[in-house]
Image 1 (cartoon, rainbow, N blue to C red):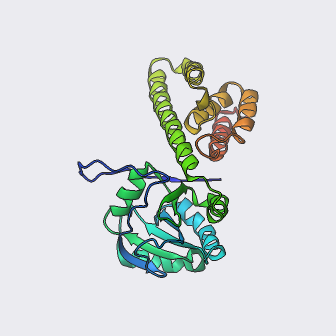
Image 2: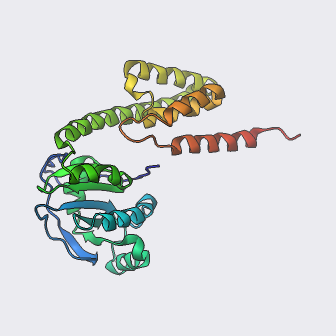
Image 3: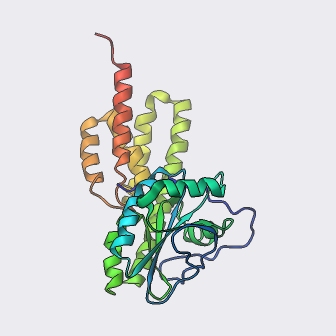
Length: 286
């Protein structure tokens, strides 16, 4: 299960336009406030692969991914360097950051640093359009970004990169298509949330049926959105309330259908949990 913490993307009042960062582009420079663990890395050496991993102390999924990153660092230590970059901290006191890193021990067994101001957030995360952490950027032996994604998927990527079978150009095209897919899903999700709020004011007794009709219209217009996370969350929730058998059939397909990301299983779990809780709360006493 791949879980992310969403970030509030901020420009801090800067008017300059970001240079987009995509797979295949030269990796931006590293600029750190301080190194908290391991050997400081000041640049990318040729013929070595680097994983630049973004995390924060407040991000549960980031902490959960750290042991796996340590395993990756140990497994590929002859060819790969892992760098953990702390970003977006609300209270960036160095003492507290060092204490956190020390408390992780061997579960965080790679080089770790804190970003300098917002440089890394701006030139890596914002420039690439990544809105959540943890996220890993893999930099190849030529200093180019070869892959961007959740750290739990690194084992699928590194072998191909190290044996030169990874097609960076294809990966770049695929990512651009996935970003368009994600933008469509985000837009549909926003539309459905606003529509739901309006229906609940005007016609609460018909809101579920009207909203499901709108979901079907969106999917008819953009079939690729049928199992995309935002549309899927709304669809499954509505089917649970209106036709549990259809919800079951839809959920089975959703759980094995990848869209612009691996199926976020928590959508199913959270909706079932919420539906069960609401059902129990409204059940009559016997």
